[in-house]
Each structure stands twice: as C-alpha cells, then as structure tokens.
Image (spheres, rainbow, N blue to C red):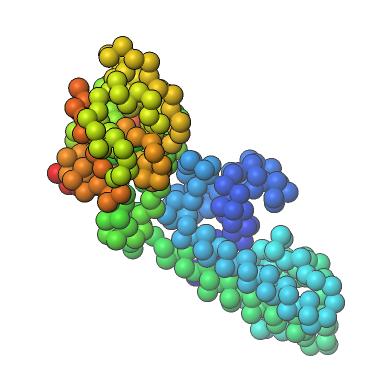
Length: 397
C-alpha cells in the first residue's frame, strides 16, 4: 500500500468501534474520547478512501456496503495488533498497550531501525529528522513496555520485541491494503443498502420473493426487512432510516413529503384452519361475531375494514385476541388455533394457500385494496429502489 493511501491506525480503531456500537456517541465512550473526534475521524477516513462508510439506519449508525468491506479489514488489523501484544507479553515482561496508541510512524521508525541498524540511517530512509525518529522510538517503547533496541558502538541492535513489531507493520500493511483496492468501480452490480418497511398483513410475501432474487443477483447489496406500524415506519422513512415501505396504500399518504406508487391489487380475505368448524356451515358476518380473531392492529386499513364489516350489519366488532404485525406469523397462529384471520391476498396467492389454511366462503363487500410502495418525494428513486420496484411488479404480474 502506498504510504499516502494508508488508512490511519486511529481510523481503524474508530471504524471498528462505531460499527460495533452502532453509535458515534457510544464509540466515543468506548474509546475514551469525544463524539466530535469520532465524527472527524470517520469523515477523514471517508474522504481519504472516497467512499461512505456509515449511514443512519433503523438500528442506529449502520455500515454501508463499503463500510462492511472496510470493517472486515479493520477488525482483522486489530486482531493482528492483539496477537502481537500476546506474543510480546509471552516473550517476557509486562503486556504492551499497542492497540489504543499505535501509529504508523511508530512502526515505520522501528522497522527502519531494525533493517538499517541506526536512527540516522532510518531518518534518511524515511525522510524524517533523526529527533523525529528518536521520538517515535521512545513513544512505542513506552507503549510496548519493552526494551526494543540495545545501544552498540556502531548503532542500535534490535531485540526480539522490535523485530516482532517490524513484522506487525508488514502484516498490517498487507491486511489494510485490501481497503485501498476496494473502490466502487471495481465492483459489479448494485451495492449499498435497501431497507424496506413491512406494513402489517399485506404485501410481505412478495417482498420475501424479491429479496431472494436480489440476494442471488446482487451479492454486495445489503437487504433489511423492518416490520412495523404505518406511523412508526413512515417516521423512519422520513428520517432516512429505511428506504421505502411496502403494503396497503393510504391513497394518498398522510405525510406531504411521502408519495405512493401503486403496484397491484389484493383482496381482503377471511381464512381459518383447514378443519375449522366455520367451513362446515353457511356463515355470515353476523354469525362470525363470537369467533376468535386475528386482525391487524388499530389504526391500520385492515382493522378499519374489519370493524366496518360488523358495524354495517349492526353488530359490535369483536375483540381481537391476538395482535401481530407479521403476515407469516399471523398465518402460523391461524393454522394453530381456532381463530379466523382477516388477511389480504392476490388471486394467485389465494390459490396457493398453505395446506393447513382454507378460505372462509363468504362475500366481503369492497374487499379490493391497493398494494404499493411508499417513498420519499425528495431525490427521486435511487437505482436500488428502481430495481426493487421492477422486481416487485414482475412478481405481482
């Protein structure tokens, strides 16, 4: 790795700490420094590498795809330092404290003196002053807590500990060289992150299918599915913690800075376990009033439709016995209980219900609903979102 392209060892430590804690503030506490120092260190690393390492995400500060690749090298480099500390401690004397304080100029000075035998020769080789070489040697001697060189009439004789540090320099250069060569133009296909908010009880199966396709086609694309309520996910979308939402459209979105993209229609459908008693007799909304129900939470279009069904026949909407946000989990609960569920299905998905589920034969008025994407108005669709939309449409058709 060219010297000007080397990522600083301080940057290596900070990148690792931010990735582990998912927070600049927590990373600062871990490193016993300030949050502005952490922010400046990450910014300088991103500027030097020409890539974004972190982004705001659902779980806090998340590594980008470039950040994930960089993090692998940073974590491996810190393990190399720890291994050197272990080996130097085993050789005798107190354990070194290299991980927190080590800098390239320390290792450069040690390696040059080990190879050339004197500080004066090392200063010429590194284009540094001899006092600067001496200060670097003194600093790393303090951190390593070891004798690194013995003075001889003709120069400095390296100890085994000094030779181990010189070897560590080469190990770190080799490991961190992978960061300098990891540039966007060297990768093919889509990269970065796609975080999708999954609205309750609708559109979730199609997202799973599209994720499967994208995983195979774009191995460098990080995919996240985040279930939640509409308001929770909408706020996350507005804060750019997620990239879009999939599910029942509000027509239009209640938030002025969000817009909706229609994908396909589904229908509200009642389903129950395949051997549920309701399948053996004629049923109506009125006769189902006393059944146990699995329905989306209050505040969702599914719940509003459910309550309207009963009010239209002069009945009190039944109390919901189980509140679930995941479509797949709802199906599992329905299959393993005496509950009836109100879910939404496309005609195609209704034909391929799980064997243990069966549609309740009843006509539901006004059951057709629009399924689609909700995205931010500003900035337009990213390349990732355009591909995601195309795949969703392909699955829906």
